[in-house]
Length: 153
Image (cartoon, rainbow, N blue to C red; front, side):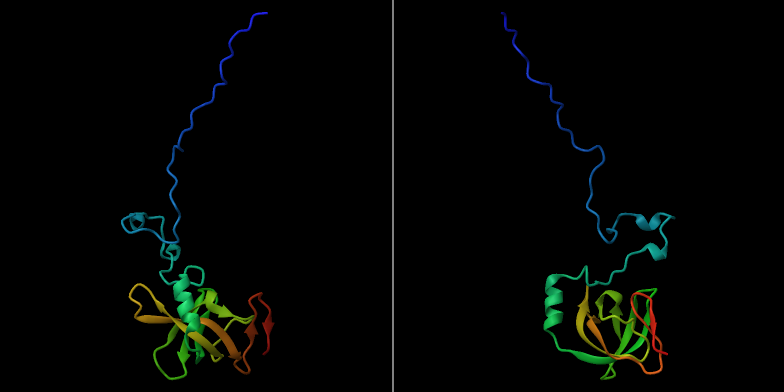
């Protein structure tokens, strides 16, 4: 019996992917020239406002530790996903994003709410309402649940 030397199995070398893998961001980076493309429309542009999902942990912790304010819903658009609250003290209207509303009802004009405030980056000069809770539904106004049911009249 003769034993012939066996060669090791041929293993193809590892290659990096042909197309680079880039991290995806919820926004377009400066200098990406995305604005020059004709296929991008204004409705495709991401919002620069921090939502509950994109807000940093430290900003969320500061807002949660802050005082609770009262106000009245001035306007809210479910289709656009945002609205405004008129503070009880009469100061400038506060922006509210759909992701920061807690509870089962979509706010409508005249609803009384409580909320906390969080600064809007990058300059942190304006504020948005967070942890918004409807405390009193506007009387004689139909309200819609997030699932689409209309309640009241």
